[in-house]
Length: 194
Image (tube, rainbow, N blue to C red; front, side):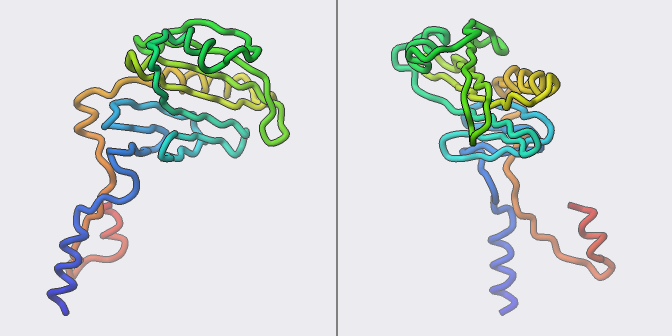
């Protein structure tokens, strides 16, 4: 039985748990996706949830929500044209303008809306990630948030960038590490090595 236990522990050692590099993963306030090669950082106090088709960052304290996803741009539209023709499709928007996010052409616009009965400003940002792919930020910002939160959301927008080759190598998913306790080890001494 000891041999089976040891074999089981050997199989567990190094096993990836949580999100994988293929799906992307969260470290603190930053989301990393080595396979797609991008990263962004959410404001302090936001919880980031990695879902199959999007990344959601939400603040329970303010009710603010950020959604990032990617969509095909089969017509190869520039971000402003994509915003107007594909995303807005005639919806009334304000502040529609071209911007640049870390060297990538982008466009932004605002809409008014209601989320869970609360009036919000919906900020849309379309970023040309590749000629045939657009990354989209959608931010639901309650009208009650302060200027500091609005600035933090702008920083989130401009934090979206391409990962470097070194980052892709260095950022790894969490793995199980099996450690044998020695005679002098305590829970505290083992925990301090984590």
